[in-house]
Length: 258
Image (cartoon, rainbow, N blue to C red; front, top):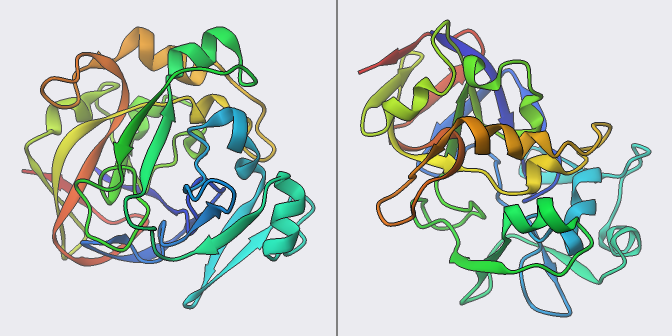
């Protein structure tokens, strides 16, 4: 197996960037999800998981430039906070730290599919980054990994992975990797900790990619598994990982399962 692609998303819920190499440590890919937009009105972190309010985040692209972030709109023009506020129609502020007590609101995906993205739907509330080091805006863990077999031709950007692993195995084989370790390149060692539940975000338009309800319906049909004990079976695609030994990774690096 080998690394087929690397991605990072410097601002939560925005489009990110494909890169050819990265340093990865307990905080994930360098520069990944280190910032987010704060909804000034509610004091909550903006997330496209609340698709009715924040789906337009996916028309913005964030790229890491040294220690800074550059945000561009659909026309490629750079945007500051005022420009982002005007585009989204809600006052926002770019932040690098979560407010105390911040939680993540996640619209129930099946209700979004059934009722549409404009509908008022139920949501669940979860803490940020339970399996991640402090100082980031991860939903759960610092790395999301997918295999090319599981993608099976789907656009990787819809599922927002960090690592795409090229394998000639079966679709969803990474489900069986949970509890095992991966080495990537010469140094990086990962522990695979849980299958990754899919939300409504992959179904939304991503930049030039149109909305695609099948992006959630496919895993709902083909890969319902229980990510963690007590959660019950959920549509999943890919696995979450934690970093045991940090290291530099490049596209094409060898990947070994232990």
